[in-house]
Image (cartoon, rainbow, N blue to C red; front, side):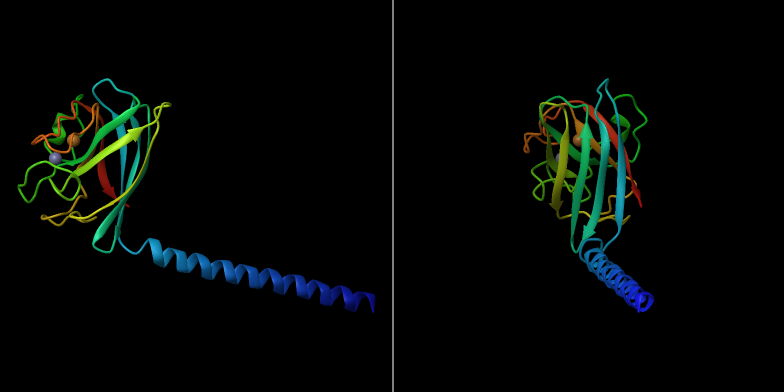
Length: 184
Ligand code: CU
Ligand code: ZN
């Protein structure tokens, strides 16, 4: 009696664990379908122009739009210009090797969605010098398409705020950090 009872109890525990595992697997599967539908890319930003700014910026295709997330550290507090630049070349000490804002449509500088394809507005550093990025933009794609692809180009964080209007730079000053956008 005792061993039978013990065995059925054990079976119940095992089947419960199995159900929980299956349920979790299904949840994870659904979550993945919902958020990771398209291609993704990552840029590891390194300091330039004598700054300490560095961090990671991620791009994920979400339908026709691109979600941009990331964490940066080492900044001075406040809003700083944040763009995709034309060339994936961060080799210069001031990152000028990345050339100008990514601008396939030959428009004027502006706010995200209203200026260059590479105009992503600003990122905001807190008093501790950290910035969290989470924005979704249109007009670009996580691809190498000539008209809107951002893979192989550069992400730049500037030393000053982008005023969202001064053409062609947003008057955002020097280049504090640079990273090449690479497909995952
Ligand atoms: Cu820029
Ligand atoms: Zn611009």
